[in-house]
Image (tube, rainbow, N blue to C red; front, side, top):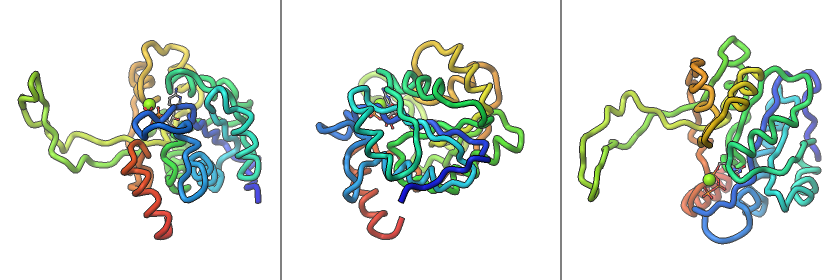
Length: 231
Ligand code: CTP
Ligand code: MG
């Protein structure tokens, strides 16, 4: 059954899904790789669509797969599908340009974070709604972090207490994200980075272990296990 989005919702979610998935190994584009029999993108979109304040979902698909992705997602939720770009930042910009009038909050969420709970979408959106221009989910760093130089020689130990591992969805007041992308230079790996360059404060909210990014084969195995045990 196709999930209905909320026509009175104030949130658009952009889903960059145009990457190749080089680190996952050879095969179809990562967003279309199967996890428990369904593409990663289907898992991700189903969870986004279950978040109550989502009005619009825009997916940036691999350029050659736009029609296939439309057909794939039609039974899952009403989505707009646009061709993505060569870098993640270009894919996000293409999706942002397709957001219809209405939503005042825009979230950007990697298709590869396929098990992200709908609650995290709502908590990020809620923090933007409460007045923050830019909000990112983050977790403390658990490993000790070393800075290294030439020959893998350790230069020093970084103070872990001041570090965070950052996830998506990242949430923005719409005008802030539009301005940040309009001013963007070299491609960055997240959207908050563009907003930081504008001198706008970015605030962290608690992330979720389930919002990990499927990047390497181990992550896919972990996701399979979590789904089999009820995620
Ligand atoms: N992405 C995108 N357009 C690109 C590159 C990445 O929409 N040109 C998306 C990916 O599909 C993914 C998200 O951005 O959902 C995060 O990127 P990453 O995990 O790096 O995915 P890939 O680029 O596909 O993986 P890799 O870097 O291993 O090739
Ligand atoms: Mg990549």
